[in-house]
Length: 270
Ligand SMILES: [Zn+2]
Ligand SMILES: [Zn+2]
Image (cartoon, rainbow, N blue to C red):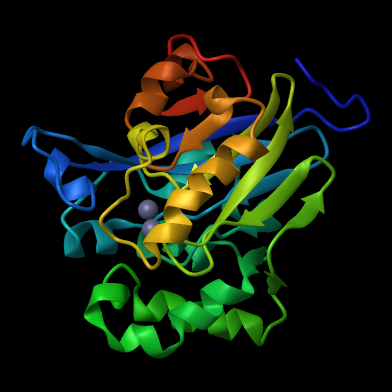
């Protein structure tokens, strides 16, 4: 196991806050011959040690759950509370991309600065948003809200790769959206990569298949190699929406089984 002793080893927690039903053909470009259920889970991710706390994405609230037919299990703010975090204290947030399920509660973090790729803001405010095919997973109010935060100096823009703290970096993958970025974190088990929607399910990166909602199919497929290269091993890549994450990683505590999983610890089954 490669460890960089000069880097902090962070705790990384996946918080499940919502779910929806779905079927296999819904989740792959070209469909799938097996028309069986394939539910989708929704997560936020927390990276922390004694000194630092970085939140990755902000999820959505009941409004999006109602509008988009999903089941909100707990508000993201309440999910954070379960592991001792108050939204008022969160100073740093990585927004992997501006889809409604990743940026939806941004306005509940009064002091946070938001790390975002240049290409994502350009995409979410540019010509392709005239087209329903591309705009349907964005909420114009979320995008407008992020623009307002730009004018308050609360958005930190990146172009490509950037280290945001010792042992925490962002990497533009593109593919799913033009400015899709992933997060690489140093942990006691090596480098963990939070793929978010660069790979919704394990199957996407493992089998080089693509989620149906995509800006650039080639970049999405090439991005899978990048994900694996950034991670300590393929077992260190954490997909953004896969219910398997709940089963593969140990819970933070018995009380939080099925809700909060420790991604910095070795998987319990794989
Ligand atoms: Zn997305
Ligand atoms: Zn998503």
